[in-house]
Image (cartoon, rainbow, N blue to C red; front, side, top):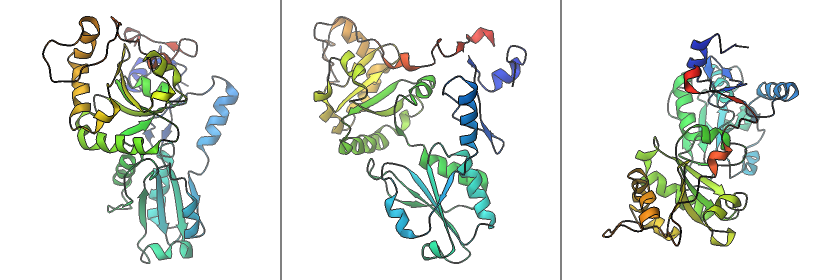
Length: 319
């Protein structure tokens, strides 16, 4: 327990912007995710108990792996036995990244068909139902914690993430504009294609934008603000935390450079300018349909950020 009003250097070091904040440190490293559940002693206790649970599920047969969730990103370890030093490293990494991936492990007879004796291997299995990615085997040192953690983190934290009501506060607090694909719950093809296009064309924008997918049925309210409904899915939009902007035609996503231009038009103010003054007089770029509006719809996702009803929010000069 830290009094951040007195221990200002600690508050600054851990980027404390609201009270109460519960940070998690595993194996000497600060976890990216913090507690965001109910603000009660009972909820805090339940959360701590969950953190102490074994992050790795053991399988007894390779057939057990056929039943894993194809919408989850999974790390699978194949080992001779539990007392191998490589497994100790694997456990520590799994403990640190348990919120990002599912971890599974097999020993002895259950795993011997997948690796040479004495040479354990670790494999990443992507969310094949939602992406075009393939399985990948780790080729680095299994005794190097940092190296293994970096590799697994890159695999488990994808460039394109799903936003839900459970993680919206965390994503909003990152402070980056959202580029969001709103899709029908059963439409996995649009998700796969969107992810592939982002990875191929917008990798250099990952420091500037959060690339997200959203269940258009659950997030009907933002759609309504855009003048759209479930029948219009899939659609793509930007939420800048001030306003929302609609990508004109979903099919234009497949035209090389169109999504990138959409982002550039956000940065240079073109999207906002056209809402006030209409389309630019001469341009071959994307034109947004402003209709009779004179101002873009206000952001809806900023309202899902940290709330004064749940926290005491601090201003920067308080720290």
